[in-house]
Structures are given as structure tokens and as C-alpha cells.
Length: 542
Picture (cartoon, rainbow, N blue to C red):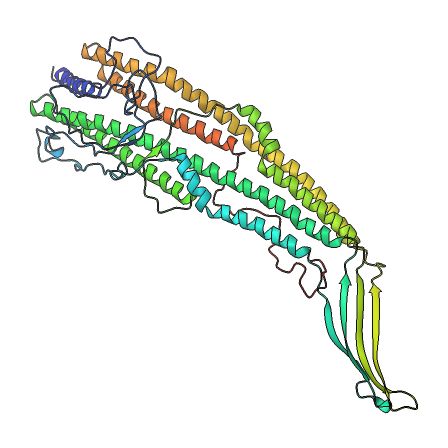
């Protein structure tokens, strides 16, 4: 008899607790199941707001809201204007000290301590909300890799200008037989020397770096996609974390209500130590989950701030619509990525650079014309005269004969480089297909899951919870089944958030050509050398 009485009391305690947690339901237990429901813990337009029973004191309504996700049971889903409650969850005025009633029959036996859950986001709601476009604008202005990519373009542009500069002339002094010898003379004077570049080699050299500049411009576009991809994915990471905080906060409120109720029942002898300890365990676990969710939000926001190059941005509310997922044809995007990705375009441009090098290597066979002219004064005396020979001019012209060195090695090396670059295009296309294929499947899978959670699983779980609760209230169902159905509902709500998160991540990756690495240094096929066509090389190539 004592065991049956104890089970009955425990059942009564848990029933009252469940009634409190379900007071926010918009539907009555007798109402028919709906196609979609507002999810518990999410304040949304059109969803009924949770109300506590009349016999319990209301907590002050002084909460600050931030855009978040609220998932109360109702008639619709709308995660576009999500509200995050950052008010600390605390026990109401009627709450008793947790430890004092753990074991009424043995008051000195206390387990654990009663510590509130830290509220880490209490200052966040007061700040202005930020949207994805705000972070993209900050990234465009402050991300250092984008500035590096622009610098690479400017470097190639200046290298092209340097490669096309004409060689400088040489001016010098020339003297012969300066001491005069037996004739008492000698010659002294000056000369000017100039290399005449033939075969259009300067233009071909310049064209190599102009093609390289085009590759770097494509690389700058590629880096922009990389930065935007990381910013977008991290933004939706943070937005999901923000919604999770809201849901975990709602669960914490339910758990604290249960603790409050069981303490009230213990005062009148209708609850004992196991009931109290079990509800306190549930509440402590809810506190841990709530704090963890807040930490994850702070981590995601700070990662986002670092990506945009403004690591000092304080955590702020995020504006976004998790449920408004991109509608794309993932399979068709695989072909589009393989053809239109900046990575492929840059590989194609690298092949153009290699062809420009081959054209230059073939033309380097043409020798340059070397011209030299000058004027000197000969002090040598004329025969049978005391007069000097006087001023005289000279001129020379020369050209190298490509007899042994016809640049044949560089020509063949340039041909090999063309082959390497051409195969690089195919390699990039295959690599992109390999990366895009699983992303396409992940997108389709996550989208299917999110749709089923929204329209099938969550409405059914909410209705099952209502029916189990009604049966329990009529003493026709054991409470453990009510608890299982409640936990199932909450877990489905978390899974729904994760499915939406996966949809966004896969879609963003596909829309940005699978590119990532917003803080990785941009790549360039150019050289960092500053010895191109030096002024004292006579116009010779690098």
C-alpha cells in the first residue's frame, strides 16, 4: 500500500509540473492536429504567448528582446523575426530554497548547491541588430585578404610596365695610346651606345605580365567569393546559435517551473526526496544546456567579427530568416560550378600566361642590334708636321649570331608549361565536381529533413504530447510516457534548427562555387621578384 501511495503522489507531482509546462499550448487537448505548429520556446507573429496558470504569480514582464527564434506550439512557423529573451530565468516568488526540501525527513542531508544559470547575453539585446549585408559590407572594406588580392593585381600591372621599358643608352669615356708613345700623341674622347631591341620582344615580354594581371584579377574575384562564403556560413552559424539560445531558455523555464511546483507540493507532504532530486537534476541539466548555447552564440559571433576584419565588434542581435532557405537546383549547379567557377577561369588564364611565355621564348631568338658611336681627339702629330691629327669620329654596329644558343631549352620548357596548365584546368573542374556532388546531396537531404520536421514530425509530436498529457490527467496513462513525448518534441525542435542550418551551409557553399578560406592568403602565379628588366641589363629579360 505504501508503494502504491508513493507512486500515486509522484504521479500527481509530475502531472502538475506537466500542466505548468503545457500552459502555453495554443491548442486545447481536444483540438485536432494541425499541419504546422509554432514551436515551443520561439516567440513568433501569430503564435500564442505562454501564460502561466492563474494560481501562480506572474514574473515581471521587463524582458528585452533580440531578434531570435521562438518556437511556441501554434498554427505557423515564422523564423524571420526571431525574438531572443535574454532575461535571466529565475524561480518565482513562491520558490523555496532548493536544498532545504531535498529530503524533508532528513533536512541535514543536502546534495549539491543551488546556483543560477549565468546569463551571458544580457547586454546583447540593447544593441542594434545586424543583418548579413552589414557583415558583407564590413568584410569588403576590412578583410585583409581582399586588399592583398588587389595588391597582386597592381603588382602584375607594374611588372608589365617594367618589362616593356626600352633599354637605357650607355655613355662613356674612351682613350687609346694616352701617353702618346714615340709619336707624343694619344686619343681621348667619348661615346654613346644603344641596344636596339628587334623582333617585337618588348611587347611580348610585357604581354606575359598583362596576362598574369588578368589572372590576378580573376583571383581577386575568387577571393571575394571565398570571403563572402565564409561570412555567410558563419552568419547562419551564429543565427542558428541565437535561435538555439532561445529554445534552451524556454526549456530552462519549464524545468524551473517544475522545481517550483515540486517544492510547493513537498510543503504539504505530496512530494518526497526522489521527486525533488529528479526535478532538480532536470533543471541543472537545462542550466548547463542554456549556458552552452550562449557560449556557442558568442563563439560564432566573434568568429564572424574576425572574418570581416573588425574583431572589436561587440556581440549584437542578428536579423535573419532561417526558414527562408535558398531554393536552388543543386544538381544543375554542379555543371555550373565546373564551368563558371573563378577557380576554373583562373586556371584557364594561367594557360594563357603559359602561351604568352612560349611566344616570347620563340621570339627571343631574334638578336638585338648593338650601336656605338663617338668622337675623340687624336694628339698624334702628322708626319712632317707639328700639327696634331685632331678630332675624329667612330661608329660600330654589332649583332649576336644565334649559332649555338637559340633559346631552344626555354621554348621546350614553355611548351611543357602549357601542357601543365591545360591539365590544370581539367584537374580543377574534376576537383570542383568532387566537392560539389556531396554538397548537392547534403542540400537535398537537409531540405527534405527540414520540411518533414516542420510539416510532419513536429506537429505529430506536439499532438502526441497533448494527448498523452490528457490521458495522464485522466489517470489513464503513466507519466513516464508523457515525459518521453515532451523530450521527443524538444529534441525535434533542436533537430529542425540543425536541419535548417545544414540547408544554409550547403546552399551557401554551392552558390559560392564551393570556395572557402576567407582568411587564407590569395594565390598568384606571378613572381615577387623586383629584378625584371633592370636598368643596367640592357633590356634583357628577367
